[in-house]
Image: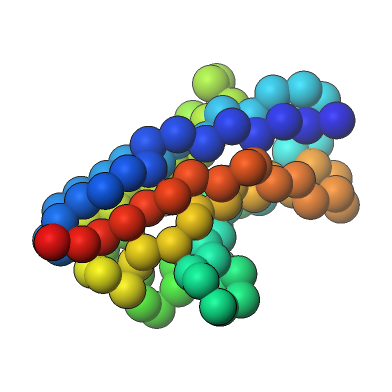
Length: 115
């Protein structure tokens, strides 16, 4: 089993920044992609950003140039630096990890962008 614990969410004004962290623990041998997804009220969960074991990244078009995903394999941690936040970024953000072919999810952290 793999456990993912997110932190770093909160309330921020438009244009502000937040940094999300996700620490993975458990049986991590074979961990591959890690990523962040989000789900806003009444909407489906969507990909925000992913990073693979070779540090290759991909982003949703809506966050390109504003968000940066990174990972520290020594700490089993993935980060999401979010700059230039907009009200439409408001959502619950979920950490995801793929270990071999199995998907694991964190419990989610709320990000609210509002003045």
